[in-house]
Structure formats: structure tokens, C-alpha cells
Image (cartoon, rainbow, N blue to C red; front, side):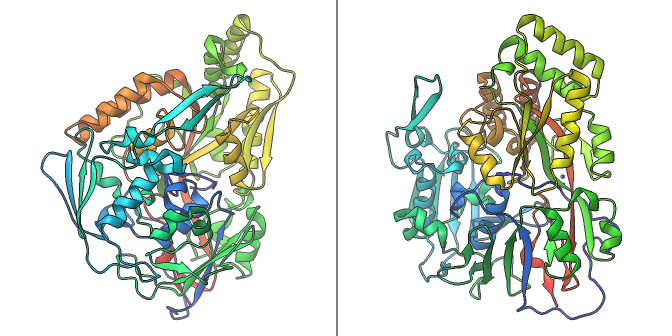
Length: 561
């Protein structure tokens, strides 16, 4: 997210899979000895300052996403293995994969007592999709008929040559979305999409109360939801740059019933102090470990650790607005950078084997993954080829070496060590100066990426929003997509994605999506680095903790003592 999440653009360092059992040096998510669960005790969890106010359709990074997912509930949810289960949906039906009928359960309410009806969803989705509302996740409604009209933008170039997009919708509501009655949502898609309902558990599709639509900014500071938790108090629950406190929602009856009394997310800019706090039982759970703890966490937290592959990956993105990486010379340099990175060594030495070198733009745990995509050989380590490609590029257009190549990265997730290693690869194999551009807050990096203001490369990552190969491609690389911060665009790539979405079977869809990956390997808007294993550790105050299919800690399932 978090939302994908998390649509989520990853702000964490340690995180890939569906339905694989947990493993690790301890109980793999089991119980620590001693103590009885206390269902009313509040647990403390590692996090960082969210990028934006907490509106579901505007939250597409992991730290904000983990809060939003606890505050809200949608039509569907996902179990620990990524299987969708109905939450507020009584039923979701279609006869042709284009026209959908959704029955909303009766009696659902927000924590302020307001009812949740079919109209609530229709209003919330239209709000999210309307371009003038500037919601990051509006892109997720692109499949619905009439989305083009509400999402339209006007592009213009300024004196500095930069393209500016201005909202210019021709309608305020999507024509394919209606509330037939209080409990029935009718959805018509622009084309048949057999797996459309799979994404309805993602946070962009959460319902919002009327007050959110009237004053989104104010609502985002003190959101009112319908999920397992609610803000601890009307004001002051979110102390910016310090913490955010949630308490159990006593009226919640969905599939994610809390086993604790609440969650206080404590914000850290460095995982080292958080690790020390955990050892002293001053923090209860973390999914971000300092690099120097990757070899020792299983002994430091015996019987209080778990690790498993999850649906998340890491990339090094190359902004198209950087002159050094434009045109034919730029294409060669992108390839050279990729060949220059020793992914195997970094995964082994820096990450102590908690990473797997990437073989594609999606992790291997996602259905449809293949390691044999034409062009993927560029992910192998070949310093001689890297030097040759760089030299070829210099013959076309010399590299501007007046400044070192900066690699923008947040430092809170133990990222500095691997970024330094990649920078050394570039120095040793390409003969260029490279170094980290550090950010204490992940949000700061995201904001510069969004404004296309980074002077160099950007550390990036993706945590699955819903278990689909498309989710690792569309929201990140499609033209105009919510998390396509570097504004990559290729019409052929977009065409293959649309053809995949319109496929009648998952197998046909995945074949198209993998063809789309061939385009990405030709263009290399980003360099896949590694797929992630999620390691988590917990304090003596916790009986049990585990992460779900996409690496998100199942906070509601944590038992405290």
C-alpha cells in the first residue's frame, strides 16, 4: 500500500508469496512461552510518518496504507494467503464479466453511526475517480465505463519544458456505476474483465462517510471508518512525526476481528533504535530490521521471529527526464547499470540471504510468473558487458559526469547499506561516481518523485494490493497510473495490459501481461533488484504475530499478554 499498498509503494526494506508456510529461526509465527493473551491490551508497532492525510483513495504507500487498512473495511478482504473473502459484500455476481451486480450487507455502519449503503460506495468511488479530487488511487477505477470522462486531464508544457497536467473532467460521475437501491450496486465495465472483482478488497474501493467528501483534508487527519479499529480519540490520535494511535472498534463484525485492544504505530527514522526498543520490550513488533541484525535476529529473538516469502519486490527506477538516460545512449546506459549490479552478492552479503535476485518485474510467488521473459538476461551480473555498453553510449552522447549519480532512498528501512553496495558496483564497473541521496522520511522521497524533481535514480518497491500479475505492472508502469511517479509511457505496453485484462481466462491474461514485461525489459524504466522475504520480530509482550500474503503484518491477529 499499502495499498499498491498497498498499491502500496514500499517504504520498507525487508519484505514475496501466496500460500507458502512461514519459516524462520523461531516458531515461524507461533506462540512464545508463558503468559495468557490479553484481548484488551494495546500493542506498539514500528512505522513511519504517512505521506498524506489518511484517505483510502489517496494512500498508496505502505506506512499510510497499514493504518488505512485497519480503519476501513471494503466489499472484500484478503485472508493470510491472499484468498478474497466477502466482507461488506453479500454477493458479487456477473454473467458476462462486464456487467456486475454487488449486494451490500444490510446494517453496516461507520463508527460515527452513519449507515453504509450501495450509494455510499458509489459516491466514494466517484469521488476517488474524479480528477479534480487529486486522489492517487483514482486509477484503480479505470475499468468502469465512464472513467475517462471523470478522470480527464489537460496537459501543457511550461517554459522549462516540463509537462503539467491539469484536471479537466467532462463529467462528475462514472456512467457505468449506479446504486439501484440501498443494497444493490450495478457496475458496467468498459470491457469484460474476468478478474475485476478480485481487486475489490483493495483500499481504493473502501467506503467513505459524507464528511470525507465535503472536507477531505480535515477528514484525513481524523478519519472515521468502519474497520477493525478506530482512531483512539477525536483529535490528537495522530501526533505527526511521532505516533498514531488506534483502538479496537467494538461494533466491528467482519472477518478481521481484533485479538488485541489497539495499535499504536510509533514512527522511527532509523530501524536501529527500534530494534533496541524491541529488545527492551519498549516496542512490540516490527517488520523493518537494521541490516546488521539480519544475521542475528533469529537468535536475538528466539521463538519470537518469523520469516516467509511475500508478494513484494524492489526496483531502482530511472527517471525519463534525466538527460543521461534519454534516447539511444540512455537506453544503453540503462542496460549497463543493470548488468553492473551484483544482485547475488548483495542478496547474500548485505541481506544475509533474505532476498532473492529478481528475474522479472513481478515476484515469483504471483500466479503467472515466469523467469524466461525475453530480455530478462539484463538482470544478470556481467561487468564486462556493462563497461562495453557504457562505452557505446558515450560514443553516441558523452555522459555528464559533472555531478555524482545520486540514488534517492529513505534511510529508515536499512536501505543505506544496499544502496552503498549498488553505488560501489557503479563506481567499480562503470567508472562513475555514485552515492546515496538520503531521506529520513519515505514521504519526502515520494514527493520529489511525484514532482519529477529527483536529480538521479530512485529506490522503489511494490507490495501487492491484490494477488494478480497485473497489479505489479499496471499501477506502477501504465501511462498515468497512480504510482507511476517517473511518468513512464509506452502505448504498446498499455495495449498489452488492456488485452490481458480483457482475456477470458487467467492463463490468457498472464500470457499478455508477460508480453508486456518484454516491453519493460526493452525500455528499462526501472531495474528489478530482488524479491523479498518478510522477517518480523516481536517482544516478550506478544504471544503471536505473523504477516500475510503481501507482507503486511496481520496487526488485528496479534495477541498481547
